[in-house]
Amino acid sequence: MIFDALTILVPTYRNDAKARRVLAGLAALVAGSEGRMRLVVGDNSQNPQKHEFLWRLAEWSPEWIDIHCRPQRISGQMNLLDLFGKSVSGILMFHADDDYISDDYMVRAHEILQQDASVSAAYTSYIVSKGGSILTVPQAVPQLDQASPVERLIENHNCWGGYNLLFYSVFRKRSLEGTVAFLNACPIEAPFHDWWFSYAMVCGGRVRNAAAGQILYAAEGTHEMGGNDSIAHYAALGLPPLVSHLQLVFTATEGACFFLGRYSPLADADGRRACAQFMFETNIKIAIARLQQSDLPALGLGGEVLQQLNTVILNNDWLTLESTIDFLHLVLAQTNADLADRYRGFLSDALKIPA
Image (cartoon, rainbow, N blue to C red; front, side, top):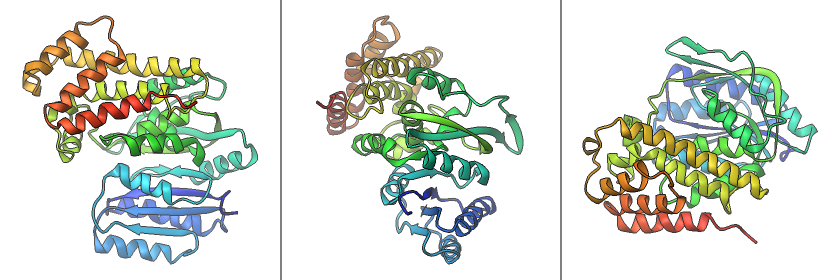
């Protein structure tokens, strides 16, 4: 029963009224599920009042609600990965503390995975809101069920909020174990680790549209490349702002290695290559367009790094994954030679395909 239960993983740090409503709603759902659902919360707030609130929620159903109050703040990625590792059930979903996911969707998606062992994830439609205003209500959910892995990846990429659409799917734990291993092995924590989960969910295995309920995604952050959130993320890792401005180059390189090698959610060689090529070329194209419109010295790009950026990336029509890895090694070595070596070693190892 525990293995088939739906475990909802919630990394949280907010302590506002909205977060409390979301958490209380999930606790009520789980408490009334008669063991069909579990709730695991990792609180990153170090706030005694928040902790007291969470312990009171756990009293509603002590057997099925598991609370972890972090004694020291950890990264959002590590919070989520720790919750993933603590789950004992085989069917999971992620849930933020500032978005709303309808109960009927969670129930229906859970049923689909229980009834059909060939389905790796079930998803539904979404509404995007910002500042109380609706930004978009998609007329139709992307139909990913019959598409090839690269077609699903393209659809997910082109769909505004698509990363969150798949991030909030109900999925089998085993389908993301390679992604978790990839994130744990990477020497540089991803500022947007949810992207990697979405990549694996949308490309690996078989997905189904639950055709029930909706996700209300609250687009309240400032998650832009080179934006304050991204700069702060890398600064906490001891890296300069220029790494933030090159983030899409890092994403392109890591994405290609992720799909090609040992951590790939795909077994088929053609599918691996197609997804890796899309990840690399799409992100590099966007990165080049942004960099060409920027004052590069003002971004902290100078000396050999600027020379190689122009030679290898901006003015090279035959850019290769290997040359991009060498460029990123150069970028990191300006600040931390040991990290640069470990990062290149990680990418080289990620490219290996297990026998």
